[in-house]
Image (cartoon, rainbow, N blue to C red; front, side, top):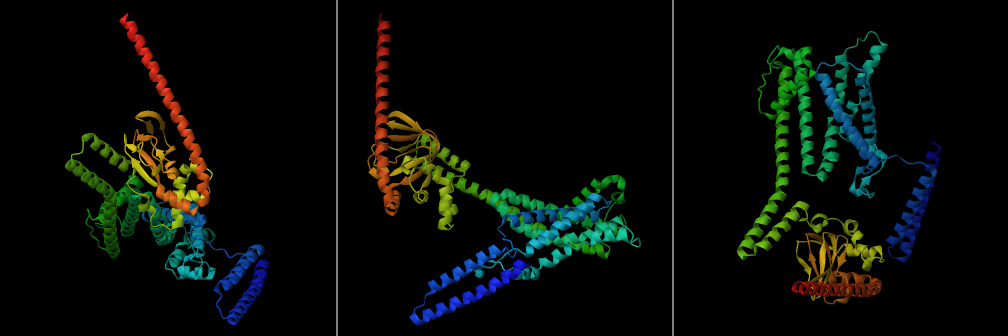
Length: 549
């Protein structure tokens, strides 16, 4: 309370200071005759910063929650699970004969507390408002509460948290005139079923967004869960109607055996679940309602069944279509390539290489380019994603080892991922170098004058000297398997050097040292090969002489 009083006094004083600053600023702009919006914004910004600082110092803060916070997401998950459990267990206890247990009582009490906490969380969560100027959210607690009350879900949430069953339990103990009945207790728990709109909102937002990230099979699981939930609820409704009207009195519940305890709850539930499923999907069972309650239940079955079937067919068709779309596009591409190779009479060994190349793209899902996925993102976010993917490879290269992070991010944005087939030359000795390459996956061999002088694996690089010297290639590079490479062209390299001229001077020294080291390595390899050849020739001559003798 004292903190609130201090906050109120400070807020009033700061409001006066801010108004006075705005007035003096307006007078100054009027005297000068020039609008000075930047100065005014700076004064107001300083005042807002001071208000935030004082608010933090006095320790008073209006409690609101961001919908992007971890707390809000965790609360949504817990409330969603509790709501699902309520729909399953409460509907079962209402529809089927069930005895009171202390577990049932404490479970209902725990669900009630968690649902109240969920309602409170909803009433203090920021609401989306692009015009608010506060990051796209309205953060005023009064406006947030008013918005929650005006929403239709507020009233269903209010009914769902009414503690009717708990009050009945308490009064039946304290007031002997109120008799205890298990069915009354479970029936009063039926108010929890009014939380279905909250569950639907949870499934259509939090869970749906998660399944969209996980893929079409996860969306299929969500649909299956929803169908099972609806089938379960209507199975309980069907059995409840039969219990109210009397088992076996008419054709609603066809056998009195369903009401016998000796058959067990499993037989009753499976029979009701089967009836509910075939009725909602329209694949069987013709209802013959006779009483008003049975007619109402039949109409409800028909309306919901049509909706569920239409949704199920549409969603499953869309998911299967999306699953087949990528496969169909791949098959069409391979078919077009096959027709082209047959038309051009390409040799069969080259055809095998090309087929394996496309099989690799399909298996590794590499046919999707970076710009196709992240091309629509803001430039800063796109740069951050590409840096997280490629910066680790650039930092291994001596050429880029000690340069600034800003330069590394600039290079990451221009790297081009490519896939090289197996047994394919990537660069040729004697060609003018215009690209360098980084090996992300795979192996290559280094050839000088058709002699293999070395090999490189994942994390290695080659062709970096051509970026600064524009000299001819001193060696050929050939892939030994399908390789994932990152390509950096000289054109992109020169553009970045124009933006960071101080880096170009540093790189020239690195390239000179790298060139000398490579020349030394090649000469040693050549001498080793020559010595080995001479030794092999001498050994062969000795063997020939010995054989002649």
